[in-house]
Image 1: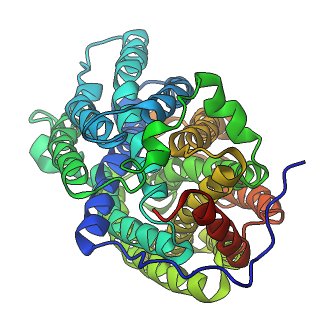
Image 2: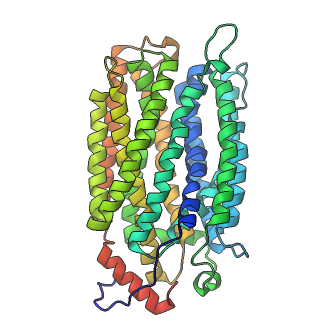
Image 3: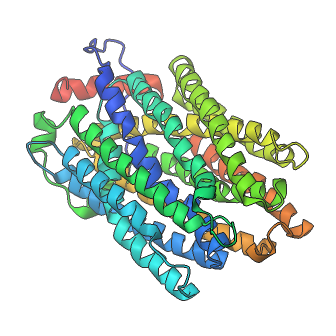
Length: 481
């Protein structure tokens, strides 16, 4: 049975672990590629393909679900490739640059469809284009996540790295929130009818953000350095087989707990991202898509502001109370925030949505900040057991599980909308029964996921004292890095 050491009372003092601001910001800028490359397409897919082009919501969901499944299948390969890479530029940075280029160029191509196409042809295009796009994002994301786990050996500095990253990410989220409004701008309206042309708006919007993704990839590759690669440990360790990428990672007990935490939260929040827009558009705004887009942008601003507060506030709390206790508080805040959406989505007072978006973002931003820091601790625990640095293996396995959850969430969204009786052709004339079910889903689905995450957190054993002991033994074994 695998065990971890108990705290050492005479651990040697460690060298300074603080990263230069240049590297902190350089790594944080990569969140633009991560956020827009993964989340923008699902956010715009339903407005464009379902509401504008009339594709059935369950077919849109199935296309997104299969894309996520393929994404999950690609992850282990790129994690394994990254761990085994040996180049003068490191293990991670060449892939980060290549992936950002592929993602930025490929993003606008996902919407190169024609309104004249049949439903079947549009769905086929969604599948083929997604399957071509996904490997590029995996090429970026797995090395990028792996790089975050190896930037510092310090328990608290890891949280600080994630605070910077997720703080910048709150700004990048505005790009996601502004998307539904941008595609409804009058610039893209049909000159004959005056109706918004969501497809043309999406094509221009993704072209602009794709260019910024490429620039962000250059920033990460140029500003950030790999801490472990120059050492003998990373450059001379035995090459790992592809099966090790998943199987041996799953043998680490704290990592299995972390996967339960991730899976529960990912499924619930991925479904809510889309469902909440439908609540805004068809319950609060009575089918007025332009008004819904404006409110969605304002909700994004409120979410970014409170999300930033959540990142900084919970990051400081983690330094005083530890990551496990702080994560429990973040999950409790999330439960309260999602429950509150039932009252805060109100057509009589649409401004209350701003509070709902802000509170949800506060808890979710705190969650992902702490999760990234906790994952880096797991990598150290694994090194003590195996003698290998396998950040890519853990990033791949974690991403695989999370994307399976996102696939279930994407597939479940359309199914739930169809089950609720939603019909895009009815516009603002959805039945009371349909709107009630949609509101219940926005509040209830993430709550169920949070219950699962809380169960996983209960057995997570890597406390601050345990990590101090692990670090001391690692540095006695292979020296300071």
